[in-house]
Image 1 (spheres, helix red, strand yellow):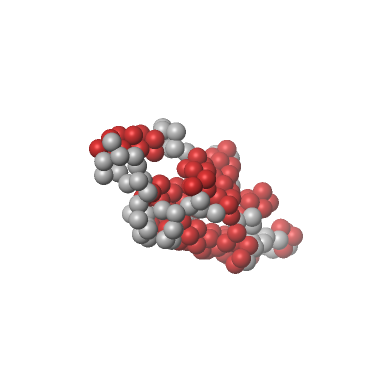
Image 2: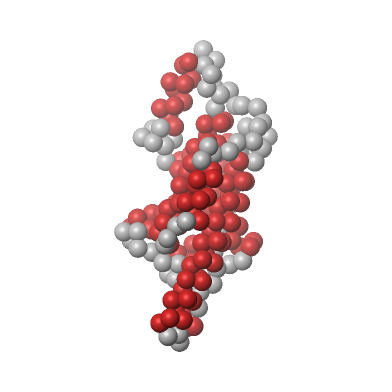
Length: 186
């Protein structure tokens, strides 16, 4: 029986990359946006992990697949990310960004999917993402919001939400592209 084999260098793409990015852009609130961002990363990591292991051999299929299933030891997104970091497939910076999105997803779940892009903790975590730091940190000025009447406040909040959602979409697109790039270790 041949051991699993690292595959030749080839670009990878999640099979549903377009749908993932559409879900992100169509998110109606902060919770949906953060969950869609997490899903895009999770699916991309799944594609990357599966592309690393050559599974033509019958025995390898029955060994590797159970490891990668949701209830297998490599089923968790952070476990898969740690494996990829340990193999040198992703950088520490990429791992840290993945960790932030996992943290934001857990926070969203903990808050019963009721989070906002005006929350200091959410903005703090988002601003730690390397792509967002490179593009433009997300800012929200609560003192400005306090001075606005209701129609203006609604417009201000909607504009802020759209700006944050666009920034997250760009950051996820960059992260997915980084994960899918050719890697000499694969």
